Amino acid sequence: MYSDPSARDLLGNRTLFFIFICSFAIVTLLQQILYGKNYIKSGLHYKKQSTEDLDNVTGAFNFMDDGGQKTDSDLDSRYFELREGPFEYNSSTCWKLRNEITEVKILSIKKYYNTRLKSNRFIWYHELPEHCSFIRVKQSELFDRWKTLQLCKWEMNNTAANIFKSHLMRCCNAPVFLFTTQKNTPKGFKLKYEVDSSGFLFIDAEVFQLFPKEMPYSRSQFKKCAVVGNGGILTNSRCGNEIDSADFVFRCNLPPISEKYTMDVGLKTDIVTINPSIVTERFQKLEKWRRPFFEVLQAYENASVVMPAFYNTRNTDVSFRVKYVLDDFESQQSMFYFHPRYLENVSRFWMRQGLRAKRLSSGLMLVTAAMELCEEVHLYGFWAFSMDPSGLYITHHYYDNIKPQPGFHKMTTEIFNFLHMHSKGILQVHTGICS
Image 1 (cartoon, helix red, strand yellow):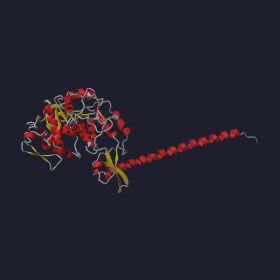
Image 2 (image 1 turned 60 degrees about the vertical axis):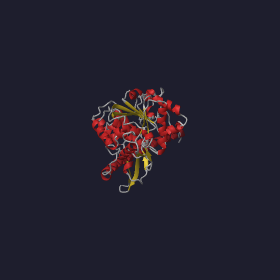
Image 3 (image 1 turned 120 degrees about the vertical axis):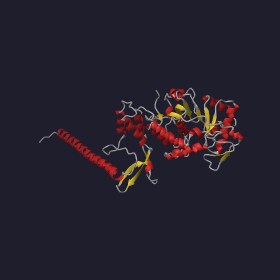
Image 4 (image 1 turned 30 degrees about the horizontal axis):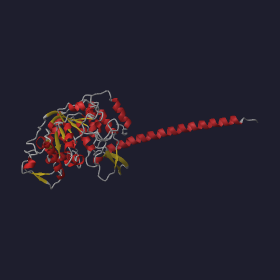
């Protein structure tokens, strides 16, 4: 019998194609069934952890109501659902958003194996034994929480702010001990250095004359203060006018405020700190570069200059030379030195808040002082990350991208404290574009 081979081949190809489609559908169905079982199992597993094993753990967990873990897409959708703000400070929405910020303690969490449940579990870094290994958590969740919180109008919580200020008054007392004065550091006094525990400076007549008679500032003297950090978060912020509108402005470590940066950082300066290392490295300890140094200071007009002369013995001579330069050039700028007792007490205060660092940043010292000298404190240029809250890369400083010495400051922990204080209405942190 005659048969057409081409027809026979075509029928075979169709059969194979049909078998392939059916196989693919069966595999896909099995995957969905297995995935569903694993998802339910995962949810039950997390619920079991939360009820049986995590009762005595006070960490900040990030789980959904059904026990599954939140994803970035969940966070993004939450942000966009709330974009119709702004919301009132005391609304239930803002209360929840503020709590989400205060839950964040550190970006690192540790992971360890739970032998009883035979599973890995995650809790925050500070709640685990030292022998546990840790992994890094993406910054995206913190950024999302902070972005979402911007939908809430910030208001000062006078009760919380006054409680915080009362703690500072008892421990540190800036209106009395912020700077060395002839009143708190009399002639003949042996001034103990902050770090060099065995070091003392005898206050003779010459040194005594370098100090002001008494503290130039009093408690809550200023209505609204701006403390300006040097972070790259200030670039393109257009916050200059807002900063200049403050009653009193603090700046850190002789930052540039030339016309190039005025729109973002402003011009007004009432206090500017100088790290002695700046004088040593940029101006050769003022052994030759006296006039260039004086000309740099003139950009700050009548701002008071503050230095940590008594942090250690190395800082003393170079800090005194700054005073001599101002006197020699008949500058109208005042010169003050942080009192080592005040800096010690500030370090001790923040250590009790969980901030342990070799040295607190100049910015944190100024923020701490501002909380006592000002009724309302606003922070600009304080951000410890290489990206802004929207995920765009930024430079370390608004004027350069030189990174600090690693391990010296705990900038991330400092920023967490500021964000928590913002959430509680104690101070306001500005990280966006100013109106």
